[in-house]
Image 1 (cartoon, one colour):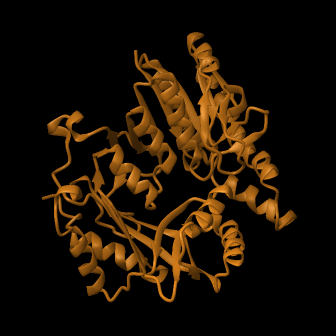
Image 2 (cartoon, rainbow, N blue to C red):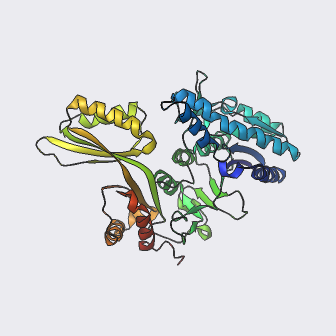
Length: 412
């Protein structure tokens, strides 16, 4: 008997008919002899609708009240899905984040999970019931409701799977798996059948929206096997596991230096101009950003000139207003000339475990972008990823050019 955690995204439960389909799928998994825990997102566009309603009331909604508001969406889903399961003859119990005791840090709108109390879920499972858990939400030690940021239901599902020692965590969505690029931009993008945790983590952090970055982090940390697949098709999706040595040879992807091209359009670039080039300045700046809970991605510092330098960095557009305020505050304290903020940029990345031992990957990337007359504003690298900041207007052209340059459309 396997223990399986299934997560269904908002598009999977957007209508009553889709909700019933999800119920049938979860019920079939349970009736096959498995113990099942279901995690579900808010239905359809409900989260966006709630955000719109908040903006109609105020331009400066307090983060705590936004969490109270947005947590409603998942509670709608868990109640309706539990009803649908019970209508099929399956015992099911809807559980909010605070009932499962998904304990988070005391940060609103993008809290991190600290712990999961598996007691309530095990109790329901031992009684032969399917726990239907609200994704995206948690609770602090003092009882405050928190949310986990966009895509947070993925993280809920992986955290629950880790706490329960689940055999698999299935991420159900409206696509059939993880692709070599966004199929909406690259029509001949291929589905990837196997990925390592590291590859999925780099892809998620670079803009691939099939899995939240924190979910990929937790999966790697706790070695939770993932299966990203379609709610509406039976075919196998993308399996995400540990090092390729753990994956059966016959199931592995053909050896490739680069496996995928990703892009992220929700990027803001900030530049602090003429910072004093003295020890401790970078710490002052990025410590202030950390205290404001701003995640910083790429960082570039120019060469010193007249004992001054520029520092540029990127962050998500959702954090931009907080990042700008914090950066301007530090810039004034340090006597910098100004802070420039630019939203018309995007990040394009190439990802692949084979990059670590193969030369020429960067050359191919830069050559492909140069051939398209696409200017590179910033560059960052890791062992299995190269990312570039380009103009947002050129991002889709960059993705298509890189996909061709690495022959990702070719199964050979």
